[in-house]
Length: 215
Image (cartoon, rainbow, N blue to C red):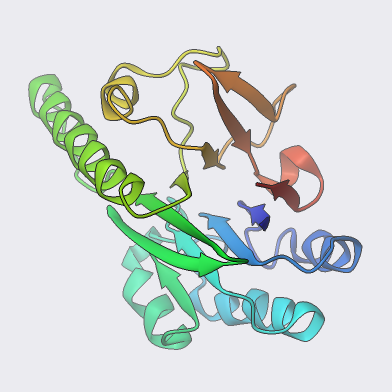
Protein backbone atom coordinates (compact mmCIF):
# COMPACT_ATOMS: atom_id res chain seq x y z
CA UNK A 1 0.00 0.00 0.00
CA UNK A 2 1.52 3.30 -1.12
CA UNK A 3 0.54 6.44 0.78
CA UNK A 4 1.33 10.01 -0.28
CA UNK A 5 1.05 12.47 2.59
CA UNK A 6 1.44 16.23 2.73
CA UNK A 7 0.44 19.19 4.85
CA UNK A 8 0.97 22.94 4.91
CA UNK A 9 0.81 23.61 1.19
CA UNK A 10 -0.77 26.93 2.17
CA UNK A 11 -1.92 27.26 -1.42
CA UNK A 12 -0.94 29.38 -3.29
CA UNK A 13 2.13 29.99 -1.10
CA UNK A 14 3.92 26.64 -1.63
CA UNK A 15 1.83 25.39 -4.54
CA UNK A 16 4.67 25.41 -7.09
CA UNK A 17 6.74 23.16 -4.81
CA UNK A 18 3.75 20.85 -4.45
CA UNK A 19 3.27 20.70 -8.24
CA UNK A 20 6.91 19.77 -8.82
CA UNK A 21 6.76 17.09 -6.16
CA UNK A 22 3.68 15.52 -7.76
CA UNK A 23 5.78 14.82 -10.84
CA UNK A 24 8.50 13.12 -8.77
CA UNK A 25 6.45 10.62 -6.74
CA UNK A 26 4.96 7.31 -7.82
CA UNK A 27 1.21 7.13 -8.15
CA UNK A 28 -0.13 6.52 -4.61
CA UNK A 29 -3.04 4.36 -3.57
CA UNK A 30 -4.28 7.17 -1.31
CA UNK A 31 -3.43 10.79 -0.54
CA UNK A 32 -3.52 12.01 3.07
CA UNK A 33 -3.72 15.76 3.75
CA UNK A 34 -2.52 16.89 7.19
CA UNK A 35 -4.20 20.30 7.15
CA UNK A 36 -3.36 23.86 6.13
CA UNK A 37 -3.80 22.98 2.48
CA UNK A 38 -4.90 26.57 1.79
CA UNK A 39 -3.46 29.84 3.01
CA UNK A 40 -5.44 31.88 5.54
CA UNK A 41 -8.85 30.47 4.76
CA UNK A 42 -8.72 30.86 0.96
CA UNK A 43 -11.29 28.15 0.32
CA UNK A 44 -11.22 28.60 -3.48
CA UNK A 45 -7.58 27.40 -3.52
CA UNK A 46 -8.48 23.89 -2.30
CA UNK A 47 -9.85 22.68 -5.67
CA UNK A 48 -6.63 23.95 -7.28
CA UNK A 49 -4.62 21.49 -5.17
CA UNK A 50 -7.01 18.60 -5.86
CA UNK A 51 -7.09 19.32 -9.60
CA UNK A 52 -3.29 19.22 -9.65
CA UNK A 53 -3.34 15.70 -8.19
CA UNK A 54 -6.02 14.57 -10.62
CA UNK A 55 -4.11 15.90 -13.63
CA UNK A 56 -0.95 13.96 -12.72
CA UNK A 57 -2.13 10.81 -10.94
CA UNK A 58 -5.86 10.56 -11.68
CA UNK A 59 -8.58 10.44 -9.06
CA UNK A 60 -6.89 8.61 -6.21
CA UNK A 61 -8.77 8.72 -2.88
CA UNK A 62 -8.00 11.80 -0.77
CA UNK A 63 -8.52 11.90 3.00
CA UNK A 64 -7.95 15.12 4.90
CA UNK A 65 -8.13 16.70 8.32
CA UNK A 66 -8.37 20.46 8.79
CA UNK A 67 -5.57 22.79 9.85
CA UNK A 68 -5.74 26.10 11.66
CA UNK A 69 -5.53 28.12 8.43
CA UNK A 70 -8.15 25.98 6.67
CA UNK A 71 -10.40 27.06 9.52
CA UNK A 72 -9.54 30.77 9.39
CA UNK A 73 -12.72 32.82 9.17
CA UNK A 74 -14.53 29.46 9.51
CA UNK A 75 -14.10 28.49 5.85
CA UNK A 76 -14.33 24.72 6.43
CA UNK A 77 -17.93 24.51 5.23
CA UNK A 78 -17.06 26.39 2.03
CA UNK A 79 -14.19 24.00 1.31
CA UNK A 80 -16.50 21.02 1.70
CA UNK A 81 -19.12 22.61 -0.57
CA UNK A 82 -16.53 23.34 -3.27
CA UNK A 83 -15.19 19.77 -3.31
CA UNK A 84 -18.34 17.74 -2.80
CA UNK A 85 -17.40 14.11 -2.17
CA UNK A 86 -14.01 14.33 -3.94
CA UNK A 87 -12.22 14.63 -0.57
CA UNK A 88 -13.18 12.78 2.61
CA UNK A 89 -12.80 15.21 5.51
CA UNK A 90 -12.28 13.75 8.98
CA UNK A 91 -13.03 16.08 11.88
CA UNK A 92 -12.77 13.92 15.00
CA UNK A 93 -14.11 11.05 12.93
CA UNK A 94 -12.81 7.98 11.12
CA UNK A 95 -13.09 6.08 7.87
CA UNK A 96 -11.89 2.75 6.48
CA UNK A 97 -11.28 1.91 2.84
CA UNK A 98 -10.08 -1.06 0.83
CA UNK A 99 -6.72 -0.52 -0.86
CA UNK A 100 -4.54 -3.12 -2.60
CA UNK A 101 -6.29 -6.08 -0.94
CA UNK A 102 -5.89 -4.46 2.50
CA UNK A 103 -8.10 -2.31 4.69
CA UNK A 104 -6.77 1.09 5.76
CA UNK A 105 -8.41 2.80 8.72
CA UNK A 106 -7.83 6.53 9.29
CA UNK A 107 -8.72 8.62 12.33
CA UNK A 108 -8.79 12.37 11.65
CA UNK A 109 -8.11 14.66 14.61
CA UNK A 110 -9.79 18.06 14.62
CA UNK A 111 -8.08 21.28 15.61
CA UNK A 112 -9.20 22.95 18.84
CA UNK A 113 -11.77 25.55 17.80
CA UNK A 114 -12.94 26.53 21.26
CA UNK A 115 -11.46 29.75 22.65
CA UNK A 116 -10.94 28.67 26.23
CA UNK A 117 -8.79 30.43 28.80
CA UNK A 118 -9.65 28.22 31.75
CA UNK A 119 -7.01 25.50 32.14
CA UNK A 120 -9.46 23.02 33.65
CA UNK A 121 -11.90 23.42 30.78
CA UNK A 122 -9.14 22.98 28.21
CA UNK A 123 -7.92 19.85 29.96
CA UNK A 124 -11.44 18.44 29.87
CA UNK A 125 -11.62 19.10 26.11
CA UNK A 126 -8.41 17.15 25.53
CA UNK A 127 -9.50 14.35 27.87
CA UNK A 128 -12.65 13.92 25.79
CA UNK A 129 -10.63 14.06 22.56
CA UNK A 130 -8.26 11.36 23.82
CA UNK A 131 -11.23 9.15 24.68
CA UNK A 132 -12.77 9.57 21.21
CA UNK A 133 -9.53 8.79 19.40
CA UNK A 134 -9.06 5.70 21.55
CA UNK A 135 -12.58 4.51 20.68
CA UNK A 136 -12.03 5.13 16.96
CA UNK A 137 -8.76 3.20 17.02
CA UNK A 138 -10.42 0.27 18.79
CA UNK A 139 -13.22 0.16 16.22
CA UNK A 140 -10.84 0.44 13.25
CA UNK A 141 -8.38 -2.13 14.59
CA UNK A 142 -11.16 -4.71 14.57
CA UNK A 143 -11.73 -4.26 10.82
CA UNK A 144 -8.47 -2.83 9.41
CA UNK A 145 -5.06 -4.18 8.48
CA UNK A 146 -3.44 -0.78 9.08
CA UNK A 147 -4.52 2.22 11.16
CA UNK A 148 -3.38 5.82 10.78
CA UNK A 149 -3.93 8.83 12.99
CA UNK A 150 -4.04 11.98 10.84
CA UNK A 151 -3.61 15.28 12.68
CA UNK A 152 -2.59 18.81 11.78
CA UNK A 153 -0.84 19.49 15.07
CA UNK A 154 2.02 17.33 16.27
CA UNK A 155 1.14 14.77 18.96
CA UNK A 156 4.64 15.14 20.44
CA UNK A 157 5.94 17.28 23.28
CA UNK A 158 7.77 20.09 21.48
CA UNK A 159 10.44 18.39 19.33
CA UNK A 160 11.04 15.51 21.73
CA UNK A 161 10.22 11.91 20.88
CA UNK A 162 7.59 11.77 23.61
CA UNK A 163 3.80 11.87 23.22
CA UNK A 164 1.91 14.76 24.80
CA UNK A 165 -0.09 13.74 27.88
CA UNK A 166 -3.46 13.65 26.13
CA UNK A 167 -2.22 11.81 23.05
CA UNK A 168 -0.50 9.22 25.20
CA UNK A 169 -3.91 8.50 26.73
CA UNK A 170 -5.45 8.24 23.25
CA UNK A 171 -3.06 5.49 22.16
CA UNK A 172 -2.58 3.77 25.50
CA UNK A 173 -4.70 0.73 24.63
CA UNK A 174 -4.37 0.62 20.85
CA UNK A 175 -1.31 1.81 18.95
CA UNK A 176 -1.86 2.96 15.35
CA UNK A 177 0.34 1.66 12.55
CA UNK A 178 1.58 5.19 12.03
CA UNK A 179 0.86 8.82 12.88
CA UNK A 180 0.93 11.65 10.36
CA UNK A 181 0.92 15.36 11.22
CA UNK A 182 1.88 18.73 9.77
CA UNK A 183 2.10 22.29 11.15
CA UNK A 184 5.80 22.14 12.07
CA UNK A 185 7.48 24.06 9.25
CA UNK A 186 10.97 23.83 10.74
CA UNK A 187 12.20 20.49 12.02
CA UNK A 188 15.48 18.62 12.03
CA UNK A 189 13.82 15.19 11.88
CA UNK A 190 10.64 14.54 9.94
CA UNK A 191 10.31 10.89 10.95
CA UNK A 192 10.73 9.57 14.48
CA UNK A 193 9.63 6.38 16.21
CA UNK A 194 7.81 6.87 19.49
CA UNK A 195 7.03 3.80 21.57
CA UNK A 196 7.33 1.63 18.43
CA UNK A 197 5.01 3.86 16.34
CA UNK A 198 6.42 5.81 13.36
CA UNK A 199 5.49 9.51 13.48
CA UNK A 200 5.82 11.55 10.29
CA UNK A 201 5.88 15.33 9.99
CA UNK A 202 4.67 15.86 6.41
CA UNK A 203 4.61 19.67 6.42
CA UNK A 204 5.72 20.62 2.90
CA UNK A 205 8.03 23.49 3.98
CA UNK A 206 9.85 21.14 6.37
CA UNK A 207 10.20 18.11 4.09
CA UNK A 208 10.53 19.94 0.77
CA UNK A 209 8.44 17.31 -1.01
CA UNK A 210 5.41 15.07 -0.67
CA UNK A 211 6.13 12.25 1.78
CA UNK A 212 5.84 8.71 0.40
CA UNK A 213 5.06 5.89 2.84
CA UNK A 214 4.78 2.21 1.96
CA UNK A 215 2.90 -0.17 4.29
